[in-house]
Image 1 (cartoon, rainbow, N blue to C red):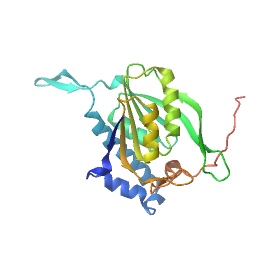
Image 2 (image 1 turned 90 degrees about the vertical axis):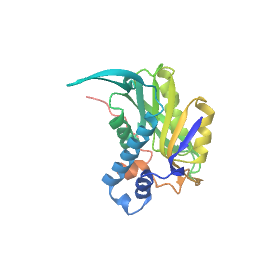
Image 3 (image 1 turned 45 degrees about the vertical axis):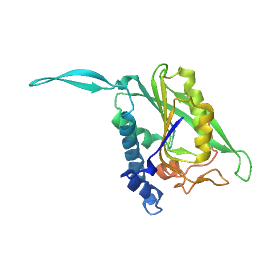
Image 4 (image 1 turned 60 degrees about the vertical axis):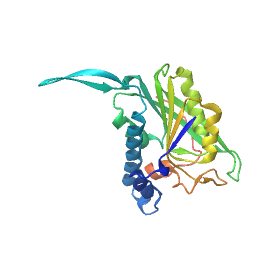
Amino acid sequence: MKVINFAEENSVINHYMAELRDKNYQKNRLTFRHNVERIGEMMAYELSKTLEYKPKTVKTPLGELDIPLTKQEDMVIATVLRAGLPFHQGFLNVFDKADNAYVSAFRMYLNREHTEVGVHTEYIATPSVKGRTLLIVDPMLATGGSLAAAYEALMEAGQPKQVHVCCVIAAPEGVEALKEFLPDSATLWCASIDKGLNEQKYIVPGFGDCGDLCYGEKLSGFRKTLTAK
């Protein structure tokens, strides 16, 4: 698996990352979501350089021109709800003709000390990914459990031609976990790979819970089945 870490080079992504991590900036959810979205756009642009292109003749009012284009219709952008939504939108702003997939996967603590984590998958909506370029975009790669669950669910929709996993922040533990189940040809894109995980399996220094910072705090572990009448 190829790993690309944008924190190893200077770019404006570092400015957006600094604001995401800053406790004062985090008080503004709109700014937080916007920065996550902008990082998605820039990562999508860099990823676009690795795709296959074929020339297409475009007619202008004054003539014709061959322009290399990639077939976005062969792409599927998948995200993990809910934290992945603004990051996903950044990629969709760039690859606007791509199909989309959504997976509901969330962490569950398995002990009172909150040191053992499991992942529960409830919902998936996806087109076929068979023979296509699959982008799994999830802002946080901590243990790798939710990404593994999402990948396993998506593989039921076919075998993709190429797999890209895209994260805002990753932990080394999660990077190693991906190597266990992703194909060798896959690529991991990260805006930063941080030091590691704390006892509660959160990324350190990280920036906290991405879903809560984007949309507000949730009732942890709250589940309810609704029946239509």
